[in-house]
Length: 591
Ligand SMILES: *[C@@H]1O[C@H](CO)[C@@H](O)[C@H](O)[C@H]1NC(C)=O
Ligand SMILES: *[C@@H]1O[C@H](CO)[C@@H](O)[C@H](O)[C@H]1NC(C)=O
Image (cartoon, rainbow, N blue to C red):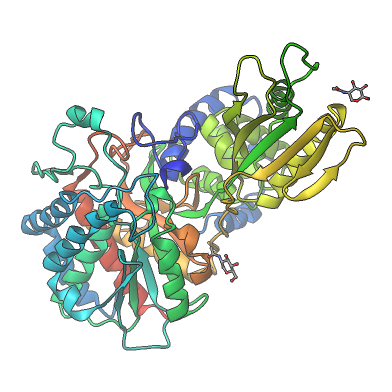
C-alpha cells in the first residue's frame, strides 16, 4: 500500500522516500497501536485528576454508542448452507495448502514498480506484468470463464462478475499487483530468497506475500471457490487491480477509475474495499481498524531569487541566507496539531476508550469526558500528542525535505529553493495549508524587500525589490485529504463491513457472541489506490483482514526484508472476502 513517496515511518513520523532500508509501515492500525499501547500506560501514571465523577452515565452511553457504533456479527442467511460448506473447506489442511500454492506462485513472479517508471508502452519494465497475468489465467480457470476481464491501460485488470439484479449497486474490491522493489544489497538478509514464494508449512515468504498479493489473490481465491460451489451473485461484483499503487497509481488506478466512471457512473458502487488497516490486540481487546480517511499532501517549493554577482562585493543577505531565514521561520511556527471532535481519529480514540479492556480507568474516563468537556479534550490531546505518531495523525505536518542553492564558491547565488512536504490533516485542505504557508512568510518577505508571489497570486510588491520570493506546488501533485467515509449507525455499508469482520473472526476461531472483536474507524497516513476512486462511491474503506497480533511494529515485513504472511491468516482473508461477497449479495440496505 501507499506509494513510496507517500510513506512515513510510523515510529518516527518521518517521510520515507525510497524502497526498503529500514522498518516502515503503511498501516494506520499499527501506528495507532504503537501510540495507544504506550500512551495509555503513561497517561495512566500521569493523570492527576478524575473526570469520572462528572459523568452522566446514560446520556454519555448514548453518545459513545454514536461515536463508536458496533454492529452485530453478520452471517449469510440465504446462502447459509453454501457458506457453511465453504467454511468446512476452508477449515481443511488441503485448502491451506491450495491457498499457499496460489499465493506462492503469485509471489514468484516479480512485479516491481520503480519510482522513475515511464508510461506504459515506453518503459519496458512494465512487461513484468505479462507473465503475472498468464499466471492468473492459469490459476483461476473458472474466473476466466465466468467473469468479464477488461485490460485497462494494458496492465490494469478490471473483472466484472455480473449479478442477476441490475438494480443493486455493485460491490467494488480493489487490490494492487505491483510490489516495492527488493533492494539488491538486502537480498542476503532474507531467510528465503525474496521471490521464492516459499511455504514452510506455516507461512508464505517473499515480497508481495502481504502487500498486496495476499489481497489480490485472496479476492480471486474467494471468487474461484464461490464459483466452484455454483454461487451466482444477484449483486454485481467488480475487482479493480492497479499495477503502480506503490508509485501513486497514475498508470493503473487513475485509468481504472476513468474506465469504471464511464461504465458504471458516479457514486455507482455500494461499497469499496481496498487494502489498509488491520486488526490487532490493543490493551487486551482485539480491535479492527479500517481506514475511513487518508491525509492529503502538499509539497511547497519556496524559491528566493536575488541579483547575482561576484561574491567579493556581497550584499548583507544572499538568496541562500534569506531562504535560511525563511526556513527557520517555518520551523519556529509549526502547524499546531489539535485533537478535534468529529474527526476520524477522535472516533478511533473513542472506540479504544470504550472497548480496550485493559485501558487504565482514568484514561478511559478522560476519553469519555472529552466528549463534552473542552478541558478534558485538551488534557487528552496533551497526553496523546507526546507521541510523534499521534501528532502526525491528528495534524498537518511539515518537513523541509529538499534544499538547493548556489553553483560556485565565488559567485553569488541567484536562486535558492527548498521543498516542504506537508501531510494534510483530514479536517484541513490544500487551500488552508497554502494560505498558512503564504502567511508565515508575509512579514519576512517585506523585511527582505522581496516581491512575493504565492501559488499564482501576487501577495506583495516592492518599489525597489531586492528580488522575488515565490511559493508553488512543487510537482503540481497536491492531494486533498480523502472524503471521510460515513460510519454512523445509519451507514449500512459500514455496518455490513463491521458485521462481516466480526463473523469472519468468530467463525475462523470457532467463537460465538459479539465481544470477541470490535471495529473502530481509523485513518491512513499514507495513500492507497483509492485516491483515484473518490467519485465512484462515498463508502470507501481501506481494510486488509490481517491479524496484527499484539505486535506494535511492522509484523509482516512489509516493504522490508522477510515479508511473509501466515498461511492461516491468508485463509482467513479468503474467508473474509467470501463472507463479504455473500453478505453484500444479501443486503438490501447498502444501495
Ligand atoms: C529593505 O530596504 C530598506 C529600504 O531600502 C532597507 O533599509 C533595508 O535594509 C532592506 N532590507 C534588507 C533585509 O535588506
Ligand atoms: C471527481 O470528479 C471531479 C469532477 O469531475 C474531478 O474534478 C475530480 O478530479 C474527481 N476526483 C477524483 C479523485 O478522481
